[in-house]
Length: 474
Ligand code: ADP
Ligand code: F6P
Image 1 (tube, rainbow, N blue to C red):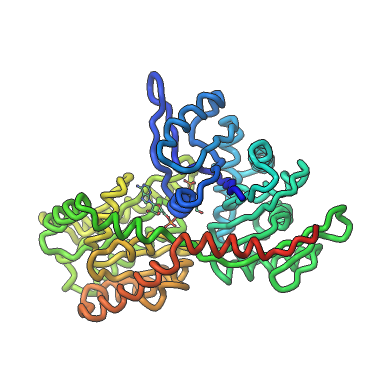
Image 2 (image 1 turned 45 degrees about the horizontal axis):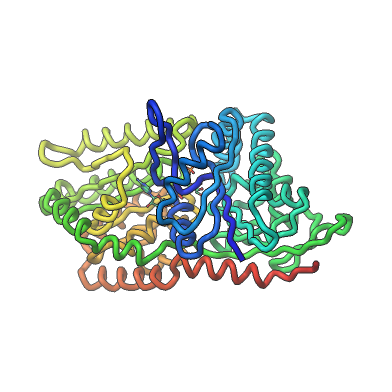
């Protein structure tokens, strides 16, 4: 069986260079971090958007081909005109679905053109998959951008197994209903043979919605297509908490370049405690909430002043979507306020970086951080939390939002916080800074063990194992 994976983004982003040729960068985000090592191990083909404008298909394919190098898997770009892709990606996917899946209202600025583009791009993906897939291939579609692909593939007569994994949360019916066309989207999901979620809660929210929409018989985690459909299929859901390639992060963080860089970083800190934040710029990541919590900690606990630095990496993301521009402005305003109020000539409390780091730089920071502050207001999983545990060279303390999917696995070893309560954050920051070495060690050892065992390869196996257990009525 060959695996054919489809996701909006390919693991690389192509940008045309002035003149001729392409610059190629790794794509940022949890989906790529998890799936890339899985594809390296298992091989197959990855179908997605290259990030590039829709130039000729042969030119894109050549650029991707030259990027393949040692990768044991193929990449195929799906070609979509810029205007359609913009309405699909910046419009329906990221101004309707993304907020609604995270329990927030959709943007009112989006209308039926965006929905049409969403359907169109799903159709294009389906056609691309139908061209590539052989009869025994397993088609594994990822994330909220592509909920309708199985439906489209079935109308093209494809009989393959088609499975889906949602990387984001799935909300209660009351919240989902705020998305226009939510019923069509849920019906689209029911055309998959298996639909996977990050946590039991997201799965049970989904089953509640399916029950309410009501034209499929749901029993436990299974459903059947309505009786009036010519072809009856059965499907099921499950929860599969995603993870990282533990060894890749642990070994990478112990490499000589990373050790050398981290020694340098440590020296620069001049004995101060490093609290690290690494987030894509996104209003779900709780960045203003984190800054309010840090500010509160400096107010409440004078012993932290001059002694602690919050180094916050913010990775640029979805910069054309207005809510992201607003979040950036809000974050930057808070950073200057905190630095203006508390900082002095020799100490800048918040060391804010709006940039992308190379993997080595990220690992060097994970390695030396005394604590990581991971405070999303709602997050499917949050792989940064797991990366910190895998790469930390000592016994850093993980301060983790109770609303991250990762809390289900790491809640016992982390300090769990409510990011909307600055006092809860402030107390956790102080506790992390003052925690005795023995307790830090015990917590970090337990967290590392858990991430090592429940790694991304195990996640893939459990998902594929569940796929094999779906009964096929054909
Ligand atoms: P999300 O998928 O919402 O972005 P996650 O926390 O699950 O959230 O994943 C973020 C991923 O992006 C992590 O794997 C992190 O290492 C990765 N990342 C962070 N900074 C960069 C960067 N500069 N370049 C590439 N990947 C990055
Ligand atoms: O589920 C989170 C997600 O949408 C992933 O698809 C991706 O890993 C990440 O966010 C980055 O987002 P984008 O592809 O929009 O840059």
